[in-house]
Length: 239
Image 1 (cartoon, rainbow, N blue to C red):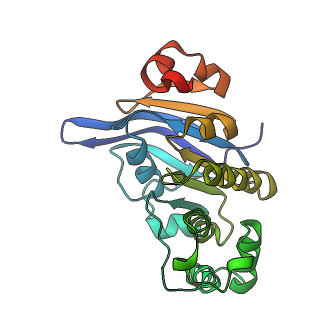
Image 2: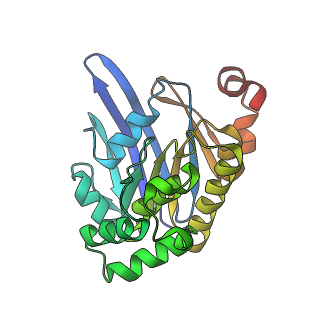
Image 3: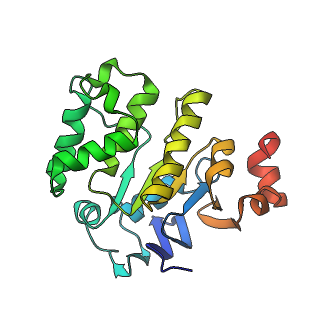
């Protein structure tokens, strides 16, 4: 097994007397997609916030390629290869697709930002709409543009918070296909928070289930599907 790109060690986040995340540990191998599921309030988004630097953990460590980044800021983590997207897209409605991706690459300081932007757009099938403003794109294309903005500079780790939210079934499957391609072609490691269980279990190599901030179950998708408490509490008919 190769060295993990990302290691989360005993991470906890506390609000007053409540632990939103309680001693969570896992790792991401190069090119691995790890699904992160659980009910609302399980701590999934808080965990991603703590990993990405948007929220300060009360205990534990975050290591990126073996370097301790627990106390690094959001921008510093992004420059070191840790990127994320949000439930709401961050695209600019009136700006052309190409301009947005090139601007993101330039602001990140990517070497040869124009070429970097072109590679990302090509990988995500955005070249045919490169000259269009984002407001003229379908929502599925806007989601891919949002993913392109997160992928400039070729980050090694990508944190995704419900990227399929609001997408139709065909759009969700298309975005899932692109995530698999990014992991296979570019070796990107993905932590995927998503309520679409078919997507999670369809593309993840390993799945982690959170309950009240703690890891309830973890393993191969088929193992997690068969976990009695997971089936009863979270999957229902989707299991």
